[in-house]
Length: 222
Image 1 (cartoon, rainbow, N blue to C red):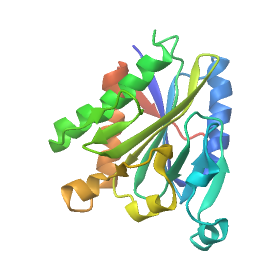
Image 2: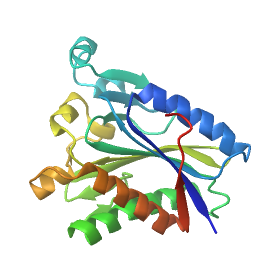
Image 3: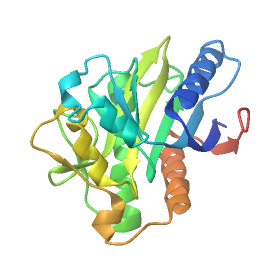
Image 4: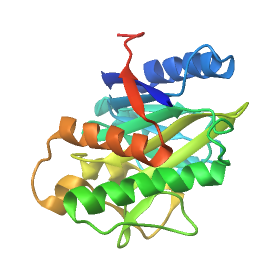
């Protein structure tokens, strides 16, 4: 049996969730815990990956402060990303060596998770892009993916736009990609979506795609 730990943080600041990620990363590297998926909904925040171009933030720091939005520099790959309410963010703390996967395989399976979820649950056709990681619907990204792997264990992860305020993406050039848009499940369906139901679907498809037989909810930090 391959079991997954699941930590639902609910609404949580980015920096608090990052501290939890780092703690669980060390525990997983030291084999003190099993693979763990953190699921969280962040307050408004702009994150800058290692390769981020600060000019891809299109509004001033003062404006962001007026909107109660933070800016955080982080260690994942990629450029500029927005997180906020209505978005399901997942941080897999997973030993890819144990799963017999390379990092490209792991990213491919994360993309497959959302491609299958959208098709099977909502009859929405989504696809992956050979150049840009993530999941796309026509010219718009619905799921962003950015990871770091340390001693075979992943951190950071995915951001799936469910009921996300898409106007907030006007603050940035999402993932540094010009000429392409972002979209949410709410916009595609033309109505607000049951957030917890979609959260449960993400967990279901994560287990299915990565071959976990069961999951156990943990509450180490709440």
